[in-house]
Image (cartoon, rainbow, N blue to C red; front, side):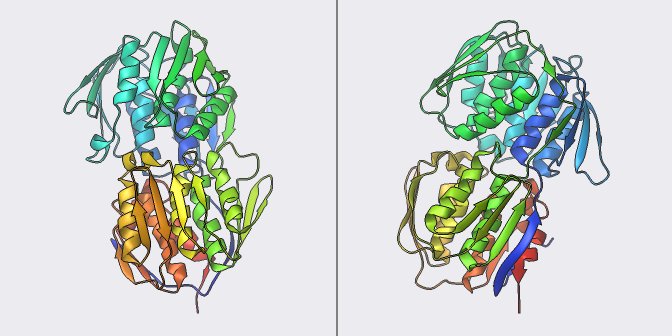
Length: 428
């Protein structure tokens, strides 16, 4: 793919598509399977940049796996409670937040001497709350460059016990500790300080751990109790749902253009919080049909919303674009954690929306959006952020073409995004 792409405006949106597996579920499943007793076949994995970083790291740590030729499934040979023998290695994990946070925690279970690092943006993304929490339970971690950020050196060793964790920046910090807590010598009690963001991602973690034989006691997302000295047991086979965040772009396309799109591989029983995106679209006026293994959206006249979207931060970005095609003023609230993602998404979306003529007010943790009177043709900076690229592809539905810089950044989570997008676009 070239480092620039110009998207023409389709005359119609229509189609039925299947999406790749969820990144969030794939990287959790890879780690849980690696820590389990027994062999696990993971089906419908997402093979993207973030997952490649996780697989490379697991291989370097001695985990054995077989990836299918089409890279749609992966057989993991579980290592039991711990990764193999101590190693003096460096793990470079790009800008894969899940891989960095989850592996830092996993490598804290036993004594290690491992460096975890990432690209320039990853070195700007905070990890202090997770490190502080692990240090409360005797884990030795050393910052190698800037306090609060990777690169860092992990020595171990996590023993469980009482932990106070600040939940205001990322739910991935809590997920990372939940995953290792059953393997510690002591029982673990996690007390959440401040409001926990992105709670549905914690629901994903707890449900997946249950599939691998571990039960978590969750008391109103304020306290979590985990029994120690447990072992993950392989479920033998685990099917990874299609990515709900990725589904949002195609559902919005139908809502915006008045077409009809059916998404297969995800439905009403989804464990992903971003399934709630369809409820927001419905509130805006779209017609939604949610079945066991599919979601169908058909368009209608769209209205604005004023909502707290802390539970669906990734999908909320798609609402910011959909708002351009809605009547009235849209306000998206409680989304501060956009600022610590692959880029400062609050700034990025605000800045780029103004290029196409939208009226936007950017607050510390909110956006207020009014549709442009007339869309302007613009070149959009994607900030090397996969979700910025995918979101702004929807601008082409306005009747005005849009040019995206660095479109290959979608490789982070959805390498075939533009092929799938073109498949539902009907041109003259």
